[in-house]
Image 1: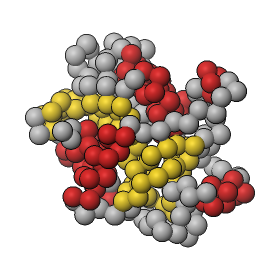
Image 2: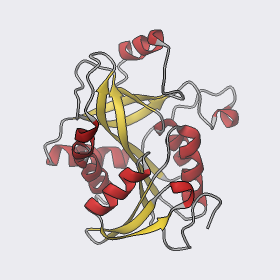
Image 3: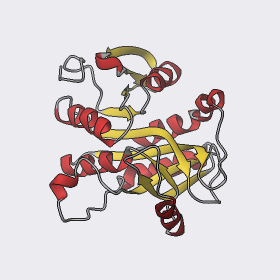
Image 4: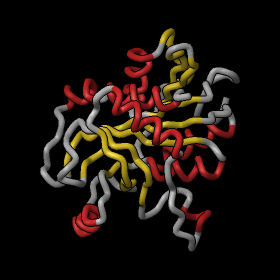
Length: 235
């Protein structure tokens, strides 16, 4: 057990999928895993371990934002031996060629700041995904016929953004979408020599101002979870 995770030793799998919303973790576990067991309820951050096609998998919430994800990812890696961590979550599109319900596979994650900024100090570290996971996820997306995009994203440290100038600059430089967690996940993966990837579903669009109704979001996320699981265990 750790300060924030109540699982006993051995209850967390080496492969962990991390949605931001703990209720989405519960939904994904019940939908995709065989015999899921709740292994964490501390502070309401639900985590479940079960099997997918015979492979042990944990699906554990990360909370919103990089500071929250950093806490859980650190403990999952350092105290429970997680080796593969895949963020599954929503994002906002920043390119006209990216549509609602599309899947974004984040090759890189830019940010203004992360919890790791104090370690890097003057260095502008470039956090990126594990190439093996990224390639496997692209193959999985293609196999199920999902509309997907591979490229850079932006991990914001605020939700209510008031920097339209920055959004315009990122769009001009090809950034596909914005979310709030991946950059720190990639930093931690590099630091601890584990694999990480963010597989994201577009739920809203910064340019067109379209958005999925809340009732449509859950059904639209199934491709994302399927892609993440296929990528994690690709041979």
